[in-house]
Image (cartoon, protein in one colour):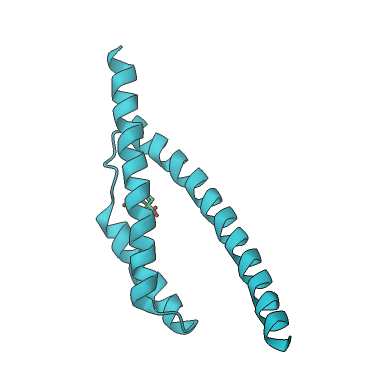
Length: 101
Ligand SMILES: O=C(O)C(=O)C[C@]1(C(=O)O)C=C[C@@H](O)C=C1
C-alpha cells in the first residue's frame, strides 16, 4: 500500500513537471520562430555556432551547479537547437520562395 501511494505521489509530480516542460518548450519555440523570421528577412544564417558554444558553456555550468549531468544537458540543448535550425531553414526557404513569386 505504502509503495503504491508513494509511487503515485511521485508520478503526480512527474506529470506536473512534464507539463511544465512542454509549456516552457512551447514558449521557447515561439521565440525562436520569431528569430527565424528576423533572420530570413535580414538574410542572416540559420545557425550561429558562436552563440551555441556560449549557450552550451552556460548550460553545462548550470547543470553542474544543480547536479544534473552536464553531458545530458548539452545533448538536450543540441537536440532542441537542431530542431530550431531546421525551422529557421524552412522559414528562410519559404521567405525566399515568396520573394521570387
Ligand atoms: O540565437 C539565435 O541566433 C537562434 O537562432 C536561436 C538558437 C537557439 O535555439 O537558442 C538556434 C540556433 C542558433 O544556432 C543559436 C541559437
